Length: 371
Ligand code: PLP
Image (cartoon, rainbow, N blue to C red; front, side, top):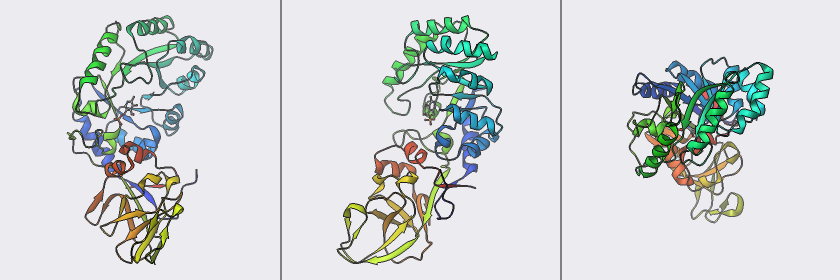
């Protein structure tokens, strides 16, 4: 994808904030625990390699990604720390993962028998983390019996597999109601009971578990959203850290005009001016990840909230301005502008989603600038 470097729209990433957020979380770890930075999805839209560098400088001991390709990108950039692929992996990719020292999450016993011949032929051993589905319903072994079968399969193939880790993922660690979390931990205990020899890594915690459930963490914190400076629960639970949001999304006015009462703006004629109004055009649209659902939300221009009017287009959207502004005037979509602020959380609330989606949806068309 081509990055737009000549239109004055950019995501400004504060790597100092990433560093701070990782450092601060690290101070809450026990001596047995390590922080793995979750940098999947282009580091939640912040940029894989720069974020990995900042996290690593702040003491992250390893990385979690969703895709093999994300792990390969880290290796190609020279990172030598442990990397865990959290997503499901095809046995056909076992050799590639082993060659690049990428640890595979495995939640299906067939993986071992299917991947083993390839690894044997290549003379390689693959690090694996057994995934336990204790209630997320996504990937992993669901019962002690299934896990027992998986352990037997791994133990039978010690030349092909290095049983490095076991993990689960909580579905509700970010909510006040802990009843489902409790159920998951009961299921987890039942499954862990059949693991006679614990592997090096036993891990359960995302950011929310790291913040609010110290008793259910294990020895790796898979630190994602907190590293980007956002509260995993949105607004439900108060964040226990001094998080610094790392991303600002800014643009500029590229067209400013006065329209008359009765004039319409945008596709589908969904907005018609009540009065003579000043309208500005901002060069960012849904192909950049700024969804059509943002219609009716506001951006900041000179410290003033200006409503997004008409439908968001593929590459541009329009805002109602309180007055005429010069072309090139800064527009803030997420971040601070003249004493006012728009958070990713507010944008998410407007769009009926979570801030994770707002940030990770920003496409490569949006230039990233690192400060
Ligand atoms: N662990 C797993 C398995 C995940 O899928 C994710 C992200 O979705 C994380 C950890 C990180 O979660 P968070 O960003 O809430 O810290």
